[in-house]
Image (cartoon, rainbow, N blue to C red; front, side, top):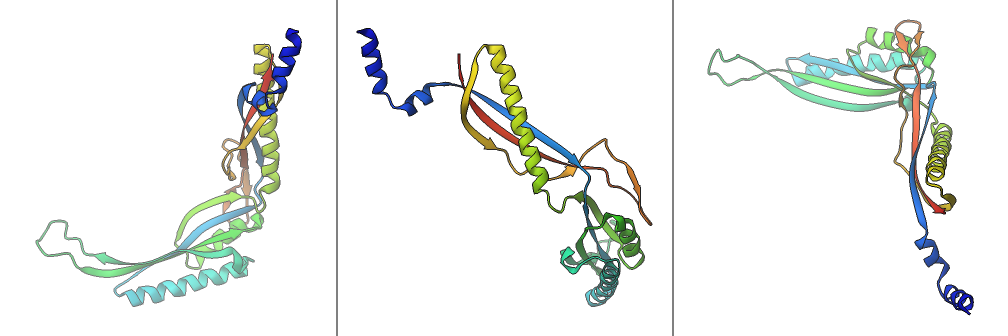
Length: 229
């Protein structure tokens, strides 16, 4: 009779309620894939100074046009060049406390910078050498990356899920319980490629020596496992 009453009581409880009452184990998994980069991005530009803003702008424009021309000669496509910063700033006199005169404008500086993607890393040293010889006097940064990171990102996601499951199995076995299912999976934020430290190899380009190394694509997942035991 007691068994019949228990069976009837369970029949009245929604399945979802039973699932909510199950014990869970929450695990964060990480995956990391190191690959050789296939593109580079350079932040470069021209800084010019003259007595008037118009003169500084004219000189700057001429030098930047020369830089853009040499980029085209080295094979950089126009779609891979984008203006990233442009400014015209006054240059103020500095009396260093020698007089009470109000500082005045003695000239102007013009800065024009572009972001350049180099899709053929074999030409990277040649590009750097060419632009510095033809007018570029600012190089603010050089970074490596992947033209299409999605396939590598998927590998990192699979590695993150495998890592989460391995950790869950370890803890479940230690606790004497059994994993019976998955309640939820949450993926972490966007993990863009970044240089992998400690694994650089010097790649001698035609002109400037460049260390390409590797880039790392990583992924994180948070998995809530259902356990029983």
